[in-house]
Image (cartoon, rainbow, N blue to C red; front, side):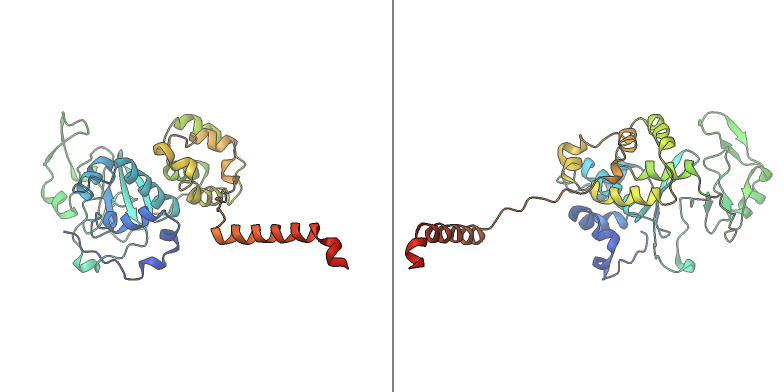
Length: 281
């Protein structure tokens, strides 16, 4: 089992405080699903079955909303490698590197730590060490369709050391859209959403404004009721500039004491009006 530590001041996290109560309570359960590097493969139904398999009161739709909130506030980050989606807990502190078990999942650069191997674009399962690659030059692996055996040669692997840090391309509109798409709770009509994104006036802080709004919007009554039926499509959200909406201040009914005080004041004012002549003598 992975080795994890959840610090005893978890309640001081501003990001976790921005999530709903149930999402905050479920966070430690889901957090422990990751490996020693804070990563896991994204498979919603499998994760739900493993983490909450003994709890009939946790629905798949609830689990999906909670993870969407973690992503929206920056606690969880998703990325894709070779067609598979993986997740990374941000600011994850696991055991020392010397005690960490080898991760089964690549980081966002496609590298599996402690092996120095970057996943080759032609193979999903080419997660061998440099030494294995040199020793077993003639090993056979299947292609991505699992049908045609292909000879794996050492030079076909893109090998990198763990300490290499390739420069990242500057964040453009496409990357900002991908981050919006991952954070938005309703994944529908991605093509329409991308066209709508192209029409948005791209100020430097536009993505930050949108994600800040999503923090309270994913918890709003309109978005939560009926299992999220009334969450607008991403394109509708962008075309309408819905990140500029303001949260609705819930109506707070008056207490019995406040009502009694107000009624007493009205009765006093009415009595003073009716007896003004007598009082003026």
